[in-house]
Amino acid sequence: MPPPTWANTFFCFFFLKKKTCFFSSFRRNRCANVILGFRSGGVAMRRFGGWDAMPRYLVLFLAALSLVGCAAHNEAYEFRIATERLADNLMGSFRTQQLLLSPVRQVGAAIDKNNGQQPRNPDQFVIDPFIDGDTGNVTGASQEIAAIFTRKIEASAQGRRVLPLSSQTVRQAQYVVTGTLRYEPYVNTDTKKYRIYATVVNIDSGSAMANAAVWVADNKLDDTPALFYKNSPMYLKDQSTKKQIDVAQAQGGSDEVRDYVQSLDAATITTEASEALSRSDYRSAIVLFNDSLKRPDGRTMKNYSGLYQAYYRTNQRDNASRAFRDLFTLAAENSNITVKFLFRVNTTEFITNGDAAAQYDIWLHEAANYLARSGECMTVVGHTSHTGTTEFNMKLSLDRAQRIQKLLAGYAPGAKLTALGRGFEENIRGTGTDDEQDAIDRRVEFRMGGCRTG
Image 1 (cartoon, rainbow, N blue to C red):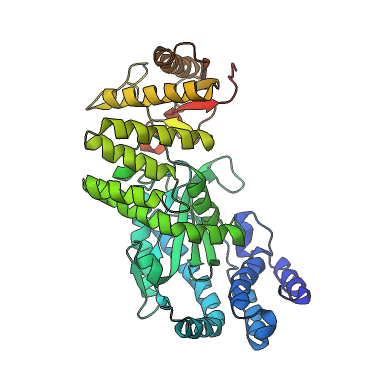
Image 2: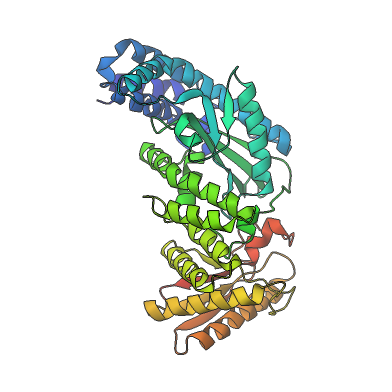
């Protein structure tokens, strides 16, 4: 049974009168915080027989809504200070929700005990690595955020702990903190700034407990990808990363949050696999990536990229080719085929350090195989970073796209192919720094399903 309509109306009216309600900074309805409260409380109430089953807790729960999360500011802070403020605001909102829902949690623990289930520890958290919302990467900045959040969460209450994320700890911790880092238009200006979003999710109930966001004043952060992402042949943005970003930014409803929680089983195994890969334990990485793939939400670009890297590093070229084929196919399904061909500055020549040339051969061969299987037309789209003139960059991006087109045609004679140069017109970052910060602006995309000529 849903919460009473009169209560919803009353509290929405109350929040509409707030001029700086926290969730207005998310560009959401000012009553969104009430909705969040009803969602998190409603999930818990339904577990114990509906709203009518606990009328005395309902009053407390509704009263709490006026206290949660109304402290939005558009001021930008130095990265470390911004992250500390974000953690403090998030945990402040979390404490209010936790206080009012503690009677429900106690009843839930009793029910779990009676059912023979091991109750989760309400003082234990895990952190799902914050990802760059533009690239899908875990970066140096992500790792700094995790370190600050760990310190702040553990200091927020006696006995509270943040456990390393693993398939074991995600089964014993009560809460997961997830987040994303975006480079987006700053409020009422023509400039862009970094913004960090974070959400606390109750793993047991599959509901969001608190959300927060903060602007960062620094023009540059540590965008260096973690080793797993640096060595990936593609940028790994798919439905799994979108799900995490939506939950972090409070853009998803209760169904999306529950889907995110359900995907944690596969995601934590993927995290363990990527850590094994980064320490060159390729055998364990292969086992774990394959294990994650078997899970209901395990078909992700991260898993296929990880398998490709592990097989390639162990000279299993046939398996590496098969993993890249699966990665390319899933990327096509997500309309995000962004392959990391690296060019020398201002030229169409590849950077061929190490074994790059051998890997490019696999990538081009499997892209051609996909073309042959699908019978679709492919547009190769070149992009450049925002430095130099428009004319120069349009020509350079087209020349690079045509270089890839020509190579692909050699692998797939008669395939439907065309090339398109976009210069810096479709920059994602647009900083023009020519480093890791805007590396995604120098991407090469494959767009399927109808060739474009302009």
